[in-house]
Image: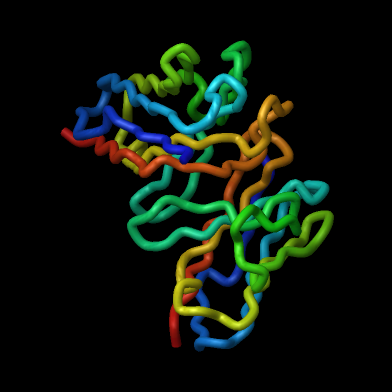
Length: 107
Length: 123
């Protein structure tokens, strides 16, 4: 199985700040990676797929980058609705493993 | 509007069986790979498995393959998860998800998720 190591586990930031979340795959996943946002009590929502493609309706302040085994999610100019948990996911091969998540909290 | 509505969860005793259902609407169900993903109370996300749009192929997480079975009824736009010999570690919220690409070669990403159904395994 491909292991997905996500960091940090938690992150505290202020409105308007820019933050970056990292995801490290245990092997090359050829950019077949997604990022999801989950708000408390809600289902996850797809933000980014193929490492850098923004899903329909997702604000442009979200961006993804990376290649090989290292990927990142960047959120520019944090808005109140961005404080949530974020997960990366390997889409290359089954089992489609997820990172442990990053909880983004308001400072 | 795409909707995925799960049902069938609840409190179940260890060793019992349970069948979850997911009724889909708002899209052509038979065009999409579908998957089940679960989230533990500690928020760990685990992919359970998926099923091809025509039901001809299934894929499972190796640790669950012998106890969980995914099926679908395209005429009813319904996805199923049959769980057998459940254990305490199966306690989680179970999500039905849709693969991103219609008639794709796999369900690599999940663009719609149901609201989730809670399964609690306890005596």
